[in-house]
Image (cartoon, rainbow, N blue to C red; front, side):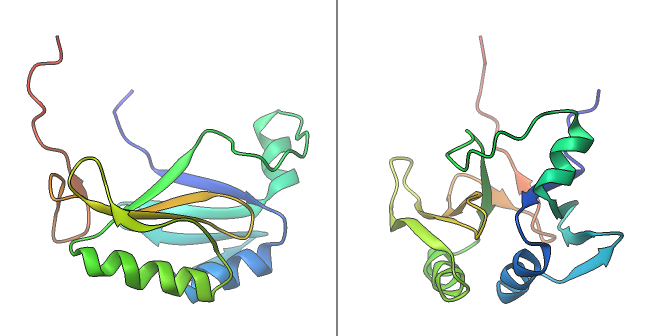
Length: 145
């Protein structure tokens, strides 16, 4: 298996509401057969009804909206972008769970949850370069042994 993520699908309670939220952030979606697809750099973000996603995945959705152990991240080129994005997200109805602040790794970051509780981190990490197309370029961390 090649190390690649092609799609990230978020199960949402209300597709129209979720689409409006992401469009308020500047993401343009296309609705196809009850799902919304958004080109997000080299991958796609998909919004789909939570019940449909659970059924398609072969799991029972127990309806817990607590932290699921997953966070999505959006890295930016300048620290001022963190503040700007958080304010756009807040205006769109996001709950800011960690206000913008300095990080332990020498960067600057904040977190918010979308209208369905999906956690997003917005970060400026001077150790992670971004290519012209926005792709994250991991540095050489050295030996892993």
